[in-house]
Amino acid sequence: MTTDAASRAAAVLPTTPGVYRFRDDRGRAIYVGRAADLRHRVASYGGGLSDRPHLRRMVAQIARVEALPCDSAHEAAWLERNILVTAKPRWNRVRGGLEVPSYITLTRTTTTARLAVAHTPVASGGVLTFGPYLGGTRTRLAVDGLDRVLGLAYAGDRLGGFDRDMARVRGVRAEDRSVRAELAADSLTRDPTALAVVTELLVAQRDAAAAALAFEAAARVQAEIEALVWVTAEQKVTVDDGPDVVVAGWHDGVLVRLEIRGGRMNHWHQREVSARAAAATLSATPPRWVGFADRAARQAVALRDAAGR
Image (cartoon, rainbow, N blue to C red; front, side, top):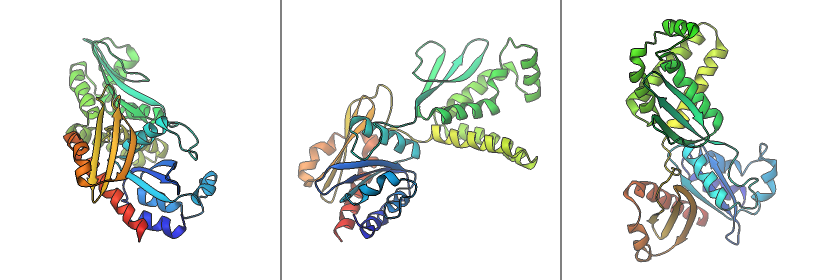
């Protein structure tokens, strides 16, 4: 692929998150990557790759670009990981990804409520499990942010002296425990009202710290805000115990077919077929996936046409 060809491919990509794949002139997948901005990322392969010198030799082998726009950077991260676990192209360094999958648990008893990070789902009475999420650090920061503004650790009935003082200073009362726990649960299930409340409280603490010239504290709260955005962003390509389904989109002669196995979207195929030949596959696509699949097919056509100019 020449610099000009890379630019033509990038020109029809959105400035949104997604996964991209390079194929060589024999149709073999040689690299799969993800991006917070697909256009910028693919365009970068026409430059010097100063941040990725190990990929410089690969660029000359790229004959075709494929891409799947995603609804969040978190979704793109999971999709890249799932695809690479299934099949690692030559120029990818690792099978899967470097981020550690994790979960957030909310434990509620008659006297306490607490948030924690777990590496596996917790199945027991009184415990709600949210996730999975990619990135243990981000997950811990998101929990820290929720704890910062909700103070669940200080909403118990049997607190020691220090915790009682902290509860008094922070205005946390045991009788508010249920409301605060519900706000945490609603935030983690992406309820927009709950998320707006929690985010507003975090922004207020960040701005107060900055106004007091406590810039390290302000930076920490900002990191917690960004982590909360990460874990609560739309992410449907990886769920636990999800059904096995085929997701397909067709546009102008191109069929994009995505397979979900065990709740993981991990197989990505696309080829040129007639509308008639694609009909049966399209009819099996669950309604919640139609928009995602249609967008993928339209993107495939745009890249095909760009390469043919």
